[in-house]
Image (tube, rainbow, N blue to C red; front, side):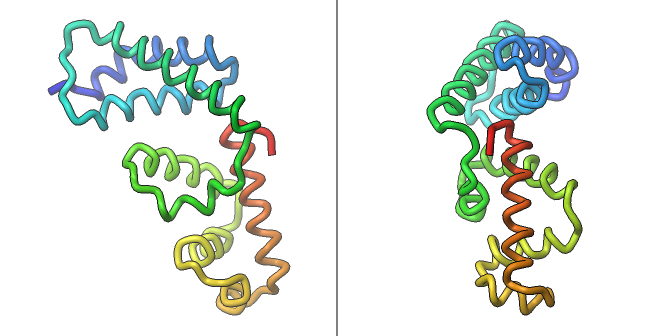
Amino acid sequence: MIDVEALYIKYGPMVLRRCRSILKDEDMALDAMQDVFIKVLSREKPLHQRAPSSLLYTIATNHCLNVLRDKRESGGWDPSWFDNIPHREDFEGKVIDRMTLESVFSEHQESTRLIAWLYYLDEMTLEETADYVGMSVSGIRKRLKKLKETGGKIRGATA
């Protein structure tokens, strides 16, 4: 079995350079580099270590081209992304969502994390969430709106 950590250390800079050259955006390139290694980790069949640099270069190229295509086709940020998090089933998607959420929440108050948890994961109504945290419904709406805006910025698309 391939030692992904060793591959990351040895070939991570090469993958990042490739991602930067295609995406032309530092944050998107860093995310794409992580995605490449997540793809390697999540493969069902073990990889053979004959030409790992070529394989990683190809994966990075294809992934970055898909990112550009998806962004172009979607017209940018999809705020319903937050709504779909609890229903995500694929491992790779869950990892990416978790990393994105950590970035999003790092820019907000701790209570906003609780609000998001109650509303999106526990599926409480706005009114139930407001009662639970002792805020107004409009305050809950504002916090959730700011989370979505932050998510849009972090995911590299226009809100």
